[in-house]
Length: 198
Image 1 (cartoon, helix red, strand yellow):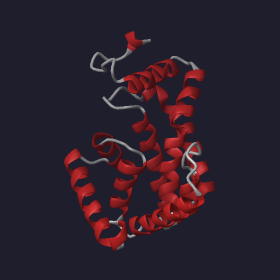
Image 2: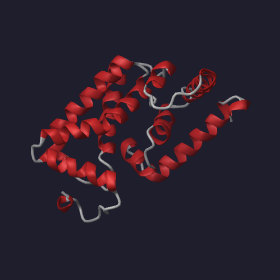
Image 3: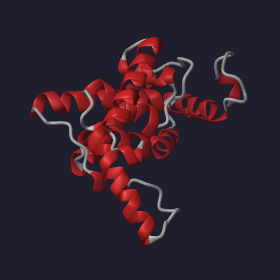
């Protein structure tokens, strides 16, 4: 499988190499490989869409549409030096933008719904859950006061854990612009957060 990967994809790029190997298999008609891509990136795409829309049913629909479009276009994607997950998030981002434009939907985050996608393996005490929930709610309230670009940058960098390069690709900006946008967003969040949460 590693033989059909680009020369500049190093073996220690394990997850990236595995993802692109699955892409190659899917491009050769292996639907099981595409199913593995779906399993691997579904949660990432869903969390991104849910954060942007704050509407679980719409997020589920747009996540499914993301993978339908990706399946149709899988033969057109080629290695760009990044994990294939960035390509899926880019498709999702475009669908979210189309959705917002078409329905004049206001971008708001629902604290309860964003919390629902957190890993279930870690269960804090009820007291810790209440404190974390209040902190999370306040943080999301402050993030919602940022501009759309700053919200998206924060979501991609910190909620999705994407690199600056991946964020730049998805947002259609250069890496310097993303770093500046992130810096301004974090500084603005620091101003918006109550004293005890800074």
